[in-house]
Amino acid sequence: MTQTHSAGTLQPAKRRRWNATDLGLIAVFAALVAAAALVAAIPVGGLGVPITLQTLAVILTGLALGPGRAFAAVGLHTLLGLAGLPIFSGGRSGLGILAGPSAGYIIAFPLAAAAVGWLAAVVIRRTVKYRAALLFAAAMAASIVLIHGLGIAGMMVNAKLDFSKAFLADLPFYPGDILKNVLAVTIAIALHKAFPDLLVRRVRPLPQTAATQTPVTQTPVTQQAETPEATTQQ
Image 1 (cartoon, helix red, strand yellow):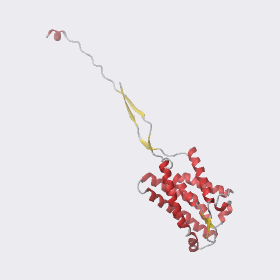
Image 2: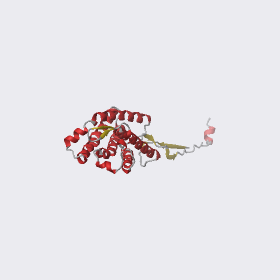
Image 3: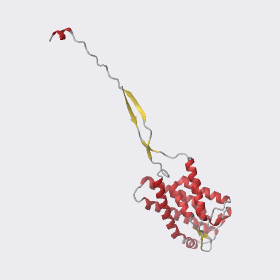
Image 4: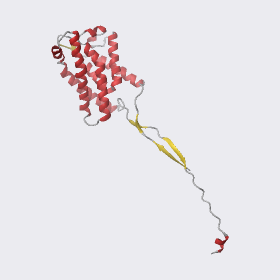
């Protein structure tokens, strides 16, 4: 007769390598960023930097995929555009865009996607309440610090503007970015509810294995023969 002690432990399954699903998501979101850059580009001011849905796609990519895959997806879009594919706003492409006033925004997009992706991973792992508000705060932080910050720097370098003029040229993008970040957070929360493993692997039980099999030996119970004295005393 044996007794089996099985131990099942709960451990988070950590991502170590990208699989085919990860690569597919990177390609899909890179295409999404490209499509968003080409839809309804509205030029603002005299510098020709347009308002597009690209920032919506960039922030959504970070919120959905996390830092590594988001950086890969938006970086892939950026590299393809610089290589000559007409996937920047207005169908522009090529290295020449780095000499234009929108260069700072182009450079900032992969960095912003990675930053908001990292913040989103922290929020989703550690919080349940106020998740939407925290994700919106993460999106706005990445937008203001990286996208708008590097955008202003790009206009200062390439358009030869001082900080105040570059800041004023960037200011009209804020209302649209606020609305786009609200929409990005709404879509991201819906995605994470529908696909809980999209960003963070949930805690899953490891397969139960027989940890120890301790044989329990039972000592045989032997019946002692009755002695003649016991049988005669009745």
